[in-house]
Amino acid sequence: MTRVEHILVVEDDSEIGGLIDRHLSSNGWKVSLARDAAEMDRVIANARIDLVVLDLMLPGEDGLSICRRLRGQGNMPIIIVSAKSDDFDRVVGLEVGADDYLAKPFNPRELIARIRAMFRRMDMGMASAAVSGKVLAFEGWRLDCAQRDLLNPEQAEVSLTPAEFDLLQVMAERPGRVLSRDQLSDLAHGSNPTGSGRNIDILISRVRSKLEAGGAAYQFIRTVRSGGYEFVAEVKAQ
Image (tube, rainbow, N blue to C red; front, top):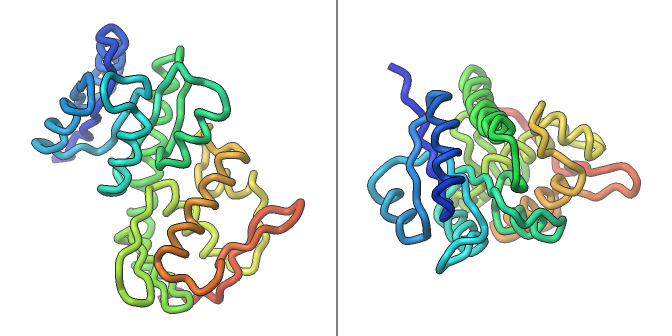
């Protein structure tokens, strides 16, 4: 029996929360609602959550703080929905660890499409890697595409969000090749509409920071002027 994905919607506006709940539930997902951080924490403590839809403007702890805290606890996908639609807020949301950002007002079908794309990318990545059992090794690091985890040379796990993992895998599979932002967006996100050039830059910055925090001796990802990015380490598939 296939397990139904459980989505947590953190939204203090009961009308908007109810609207999202109805649309997501009608598409076969289990949905829980929380009006603030305290309610969210109670739900997470008592259920396995597969994805969080998170508003930024909440009473008490705001959405950015919640996003940063959730990301520090694991790799659960986070989609921010917010009336704050300017580029600054979008960039900040992605920088603190969100996987996607959708400005209000939005068509519920667009949110559904983005959630489906998020789950599809995760499922496809795990399924395709499970067939080959592929592990990409570089400079003592191990990127396990089946388990979707990254180990540094000391065999300590380096936490990556789903979007970060997809991007690193795409680059590590193509060492020495300069990939444009559009190519990275297409390869890492497929039809997901969130893969703008600016979002790719933010993801690259996040992946670099985590590699450096994990003990990387130098930057594995090189910026190519007017070109894009290149993974410069020698990679061996195991």
